[in-house]
Image (cartoon, rainbow, N blue to C red; front, side, top):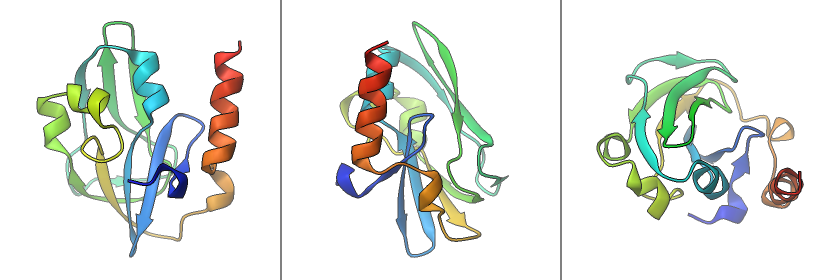
Length: 129
């Protein structure tokens, strides 16, 4: 997945939109901050999410964090491979490590998300604190 074509949420989820659906995962920065990921919980297919709704949980040896939907829609697929083997996120958070696919109900509001340059600037600022 070409990271420069993704959109990013402030809460470190990434979004790839294609033909009325979005694939969502978490960024490499988030994975690196969490370190050893030991557990991932994802919702059931068919669940409807509003933008900003928690859609799952990720747990590492350091912390437990909610995952938030950067777009609204109905979950049409979940990546059970990352539930079965959370280390996939460490190895490949953008391709094999996607988390959910959503059929979107309205076009993605790109103005409420960050492009790669803005996200990189944000995480540089976060790392500097």
